[in-house]
Amino acid sequence: MKILIYSLNYSPELTGIGKYNGELAPALVKRGIEAHVVTAIPYYPEWQCHKGFKNKWSKKYSVDGVYIYRCPLYIPKKVTTFSRLIHLFSFSFSSLLRLITLLRLKPDALFLVQPTLFCAPAALLYCKITGAKAIMHIQDFEIDAMFGLGMGNTGRLKTVIYAMEKWLLKRFDVVSSISYSMLEKAHAKGVKKEDLLFFPNWADTDFITPNISGTKLRTEWGFEQQDKIILYSGNLGKKQGLEIVISAAEALIHRSELKFVIIGNGAYSDTLQQMAKDKNLINVYFKPLQPWRLMPEILAAADVHLVVQRAGAADAVLPSKLTNILSAGGHALVTTEPDTELGKIAEKYPLIYNCVEPENLEAFINKLIECTERNTRLINKEARKYAVENLNLDRVIDRFVDDLKIKVFKSLPRGIF
Image (cartoon, rainbow, N blue to C red; front, side, top):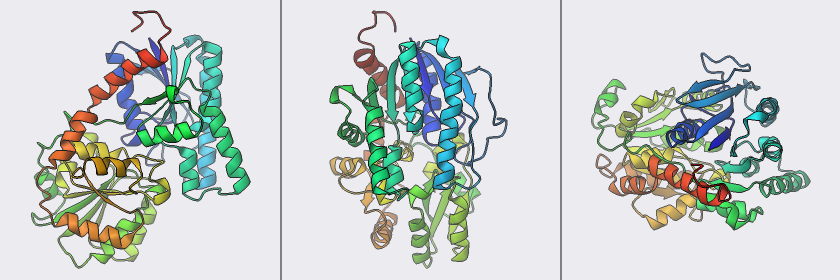
């Protein structure tokens, strides 16, 4: 079997969609599936071309048995709504040209990852020509996220864009997503229930475990034993609404044992650092994105983990960082409404993490204080149990491959796998 993964992001990007794609493709190869990837030059989350990669066309090359084709794209120095649209359009155009050169590849399936929906027309045309099955995998509903953040909220334009999204989604053979609430949303957008497939994000539960000590790292960072580290690690973007963390740090500056650590890069990084500087917040520490090998220690070093999103993006985007927090048996404070996927999980598993209403500073501070006053050095056994049973990498991908056999390739001859 041969699969072409078509996505804006891929390894060596360490966070978000690039990380998951970079784990998925080699895992498929290990299961006897030939994997090809059409992707952009790595740039995320720094919004800069990664060192060692020139922003130009690359020849086909192989890493971990995966064949990779890199496409150039526009990387804005300052991310605005307009510059981001140009960024997405540039990749959709360059990747279309790449797809034309791969018509002879004739994969059994094309696996398009959203974002970006801008590539859907090219993906569908490619599948029509080559006979490949068209799979749309939704990591983010980028249209919902865009309007949820107040971008381009013109009534008539909004109606037209949603109509185009619905038209495109209905033309894929299968639409998969990372949560049941997102699958329900895809169904509401016109996708038939029989064409939906649950494919959640995962955690490497053998690598990220509670049996790691973060003491050494805490000492290296200059923290005392009695300090409570409140950690946010991940993309520093506008949709996260991380201003609430800065405001909470300001309100709690009198609590000298509370240390706010923000790890990551992103378009909003400079803004957040300037906010902390303007407020003279000596309890906020910014660190660049850390090597993946340090992730178990980083997670173990924290007392409370923050999973923060704005209200408008809370159900459009299921945060991938949470899977690793759960795998580490961490104690998390999550901003989410009760009717979202995260809210429903918390209702079903009450001890898995703590929830608070998004963008409610007073409630956020009160819940954060409550979390820090618990014995956070004890392993959150409910979180770890959930991760092992539901988020284990091998289990998730094995189930995905089995679902492909049944739902996507049911008409193919036996033995193709």
